Figure 1 (tube, rainbow, N blue to C red):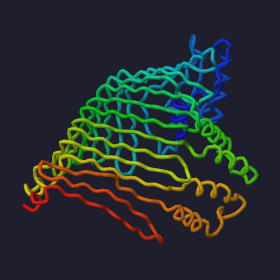
Figure 2 (figure 1 turned 60 degrees about the horizontal axis):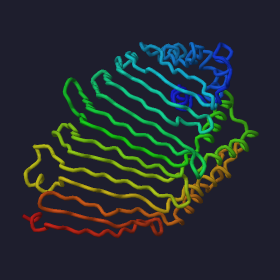
Figure 3 (figure 1 turned 90 degrees about the vertical axis):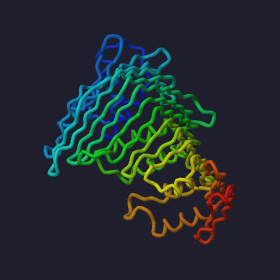
Figure 4 (figure 1 turned 180 degrees about the vertical axis):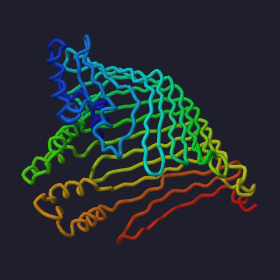
Length: 418
């Protein structure tokens, strides 16, 4: 199951579409192609099915079939209809992909501590895209949901989640640096989550709007698929030492995983409910960026909030000192994961136990620190109506010990003292 969901619904159509008529023979061929990435067992057990359906092939994922193969003492009760993708071969070797993933169902599990259950309903779920086997990516697609509701129950705890309309757009194109450039944008309205224990609300999150924007440069999608196929082929038997040369070559081909990933999560009118009361912000965003496995990798984070509010239970003098707006920026530089990864791939030996030589960890630690990694606090600001605190600086680790140099600028210091 851990492979079925991500592969079938993300890398489902790894094979190039063929030009023959849509029939049972083609369905069999598509099943064989997919089995390279998910294993034949999921087809034998009916978890996945491929059939001819008019002018398309239908790939069906059946949750109930998963439960049949589980031990009886762990047997969950699935009450979900099958989920299906419709795929149509294109003249250029790609696939048109669509799905109506509206659904409603439940899962129940009995254990000695009491019954656990979850109900979920997705309304108006639609997905259309074009899959390019050469890129191993969806190149031009959209997805939408009219609304979603989910409730999970444990013996003492209940969690309820609802969201309004949601819209997503996917894109992919060939990267000039090899691999694939990927993009995802998503907008969601009226997100609400509430957590109760013994009937009392103890936490929750609300936001009128959530916007996600993620972009990735030069993702090694094809090498990822090749590595996945290798894992599936060796899943049912112990990996043999004779296979390690192929495994090492596949691992090296995946590096550096991607060149760069950047993304932003932006909330509007967000509120967090806690035991002590509610705090929130008119706008809250979290931005991140990460290089792939590089010799001089870089990580960036930024957290911004405006018009922040805090629980009324706080003393007035404390509330007066708290920021109403913040812009926090931090990250890392000179992060050498490339040398560590390549040395680990070169050093491991399946013929030995342990498979990595003695002292290997100390060696890669020394190499990592020799690149002089640095933690950076960019120009960050915390402010309210009367004060503003700004800071920036860096931290290095000479002799494995942190050495920090931070500069603080405080405006309105007299009001803080008051």
